[in-house]
Image (cartoon, rainbow, N blue to C red; front, side, top):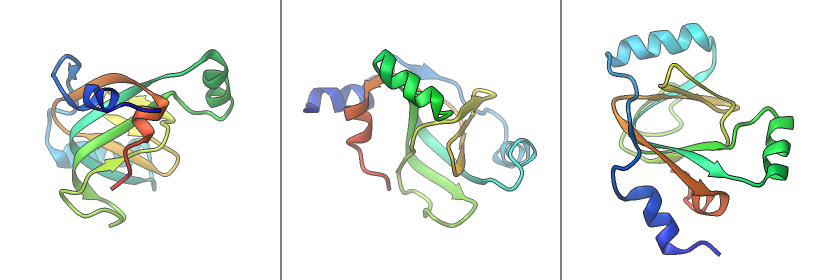
Length: 134
């Protein structure tokens, strides 16, 4: 069972502060569309990249599937290229496939573009996935 303290650890404090993209939003979108042509993207702010605490067996299963033990929670959607999410909504992604340039977190269907500084934290699978997607 996930405790409130586990959830609070994800959202509270600045002990995991890290940089994202510090340039313009347009430059970030341009970079992403070159690296991931045709893939949907979602520009986000106030984000938390979550490294998932997994067992060796869970990590092996994720690796077999081409996935990383990571997910993303963003408090603020700025722009969604496919119109799935409205600005200012929040979102929690599925497992990641890649994390590049320190600002592009790719999942199966979407590349999340991380604007400005955010957080990088560690959490259990249960805690990270107990948050509903926006």
